[in-house]
Length: 289
Image (tube, rainbow, N blue to C red; front, side, top):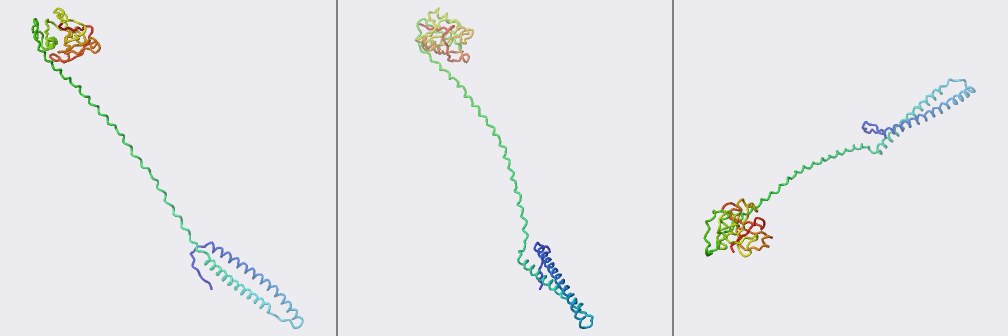
């Protein structure tokens, strides 16, 4: 009994091998039939010769058709054997094919490997350009205003009793000038008025002619008047006079200078200021003995 199996229309490697084996079986059967036929043909002439001899000796010759029948029988037997062998071979081949088809695992084509997607190359984000910080310029410190020197209060003149012959000369010099201030302020400190006239540079001669002391150093025991000759230590062409308000030793005067109360020296007419002068050329100190 032949069993039909459904195929997929493709020849597998197992089918090819089955076909080759089937062809080999067919070749073997054909070879066997050829050998059988050769044997049969070899036997037939021998039988014919024996029959011929026996008939020749005992009976009259007869036309025998046995060889033809034997030959036809042999051919029919040959055909029957070939047919049976072919059927057997087909059956064996079909059974072997079915067995191999059942034993052989169904070859499932391996799925094509899925290609991994190409990795997305990360594009590095460009770092933003740092904003260069512009340094804020340090504020320029506001220069502290130079403190205005408080005007030195005018020392109230000491109420001296006028000595005989010491006439009031407060109006003798122009108001607001250095000569007017030196006369009035020295009188307030010592009780003595200046007894002469003239610009500041002329006071050394006036003091000497009126019996006052003139010296290159200030009075170490009390107030005195400093006299600067023209252009000495900043004096004008008329010279300058001011008041040394207390006693100053020669050593201190030479080392540190002498603090002097002035008018119309630093700030204009009528302005009182203090200034430090130094003993030296063009500088004379005068006071009443």
